[in-house]
Length: 337
Image (cartoon, rainbow, N blue to C red; front, side, top):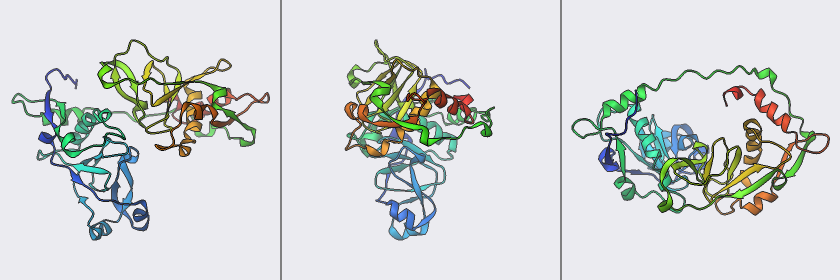
């Protein structure tokens, strides 16, 4: 099915969903001490927002709000605005909110369709602009509409059901993966490997809708927060690393882009050439340093230049980029990159 948005109509979120259900504080220690099968949802954008699985009876004893039917959850803070679908219900913590579709006889496909639409609005929120119930419910979203101007629930369901996919296959065999020889690795400052540039601030007033990737300090979608039209872009074939927000998240950029001032851009220095395979190896090593930084200790340009990465080394002391490339190529599904 084709997706023609020309005749879509705007609806307030409050016209589509029931009011928010607020949660109460649930700690990781509680989940560890009371394991179960009920998903506990907080503000993370990872693992579908789930911080673990907790015992349902314990949650009832504690008076925690349990949602026993499919629902969407939205992160109130942290990864503010991140929406996840909970097909089997959940219990929500104090940094998340849950909400259900008002319409009767809704399906999983309706929830998945609407989740995608709501995620397109995540850029409106961040650490300093948390999700507030009244403000969020007052937002308008564009949806397919029937001839009476109501949400076209049948179309949403049919469209999502039409999105079939084939199983991903790989021709790379696991036995081809070479072993690591860690004693042969050496330490290199990032400033010795990369030309590091800081992104540039762009206000919402200056953002014009377009087809160019705009990178923000987020942890998903390869860092692409939205699409804009820009007269000048950063060149492709580089690595971007969040210095703020989701600090330390790193991505390979195969297309030109605009980087916000929360993002640092890393280009290969003249003695080596970057490609997507080497980038994947380096990104893994770079992200291993995430634990050193956070919202209160940003990975600034100066700190990043001094950060040390441990990498495979050649006999002459230079990084073994050929080994890195071949290692990634040896991994199953690397032929699908």
